[in-house]
Each structure stands twice: as structure tokens, then as C-alpha cells.
Length: 124
Image 1 (cartoon, rainbow, N blue to C red):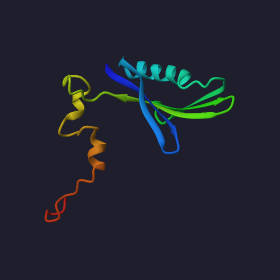
Image 2: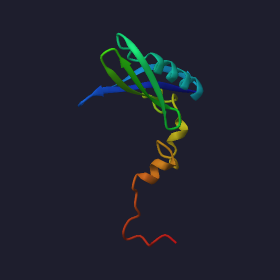
Image 3: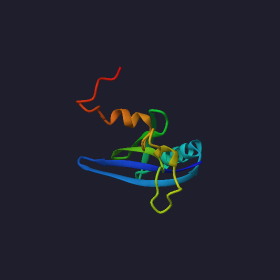
């Protein structure tokens, strides 16, 4: 079980906002249920005519497109898993912070651009 936040990102022009619209303690599936509920209700215009929800990627985020009587809004809702809490170091996914995996898994280490020193012999 993990601790999850449902994050909303929205705005227009240069004014974008990010805020937490819900928190869940449980499994990824329970967090996805909270994401789905948020997608059905987030940022309702005064007179909603139509709401479309598009799944993005692996299902941990979605695009919400809402048509109102006079406007159209777009919001991206995503899940974020708690991996560290300074108030409670045992909270989150401590196994992600191993020396081998780095804070966000092996892929993060590979993409970090860590190169071997130039004077080191080439790997064989």
C-alpha cells in the first residue's frame, strides 16, 4: 500500500497552476479510482454541456476536456506516489532509495548522463 496524491494541472497562457485535489492511502487501483472520480467532477463550469476524459499513457493520468455554455477548459489529472516525507522518514517507498536504483529507479540513473571519467580505460 502506498500514499497517493491526485494532482491537477490547468490554466491558460503563461498562468498554469498545479494543485492536489485528493489524497489516497491504498493500492494503485484505489488511487486510480480516486483519479476517475476527480476526472468526473473537477472544474465544473456553470453550465456544463459536455465532458470528455482521455486516458494518457499507462492510466495514471488523464486529460479532462469540458465544454461549458461559453467556454472550453482543459485539465490534466495525474497520480503521484509519495516516495519521501521528511516528517516521517519511514513513509513512502523507501526501497526506491537504494544505491543501485537511485531515487526514481534504474532508468533515472541511466538517463542522468553519468559518464565514465575520460582517463578511465574503456569498458570491455
